[in-house]
Image (cartoon, rainbow, N blue to C red; front, side, top):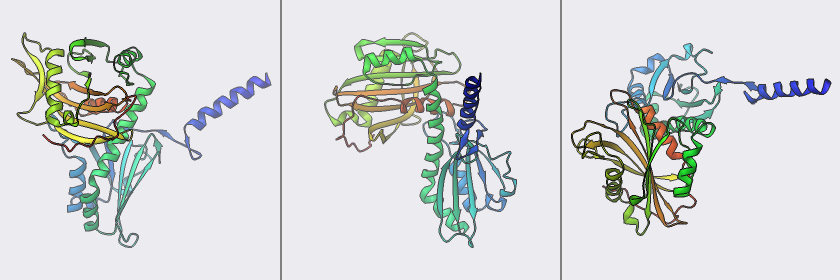
Length: 343
């Protein structure tokens, strides 16, 4: 009886400690994905630096069919930043004080008042100094909070995903990926070594496309080459709702954007853009793709996520697909690939 009681006490203690950070109990974060609270003096909100800051956080995401901001922001004065607001998932604190600070700076921290929370604090002696920091390090601020949301989504995927489809992907391409549980349908096309995974929903659909082909030359990684390959695969793999219609890349209203990124310390070509169905159809939406080289098998591997959600916001959906792409692990990457982004 005594042993059992000690076991129960130990279990309760473990549960309590799991919610602690440095000896403090941390509640769960509040708010929806991509919501961000700015804590700053009201006198700053309508200044040049304030407008620049909120303009940065609320600017339109690229490669979207309609205008949607990077973040849905709210704001409060320092005096109103009470215990009720401190568990907010993303917090940006701005402190302007010439007596306290000689230079501007940014400090990033995690789990300060809740978990899993991301906090950034900007300090500056003057409004002009704050404006200078926003102009030079604004992208760093955006990237920090975007990656925080992507990491939260990846943590969820690690706990809950479609293992059956993940095994299928591994058997076909020798890659590991976390597939969301809502994605349950698939279609293979051996002719182009492609796999289409879909949630199959009529109104809010999320899809993945995976394909590979032999790597022979760095020129295959140019934007033009990657787009041409995508259109070849999609035309075969994904038919439209009308006979003869098919999925392709939208270039007339918004040209795809390519960015060279590091993924697990290795090279990856990221493309964001819009897709549409050609041939008497109005279907379309955003997509994001990651293309890497499996050096072990001398293959180029592309994994793409795309979204179909007519009349709905798509920011959080396409960001979820980006998180899925960040879970992809290839058996080997090329270390010697250097390609300059080009159209």
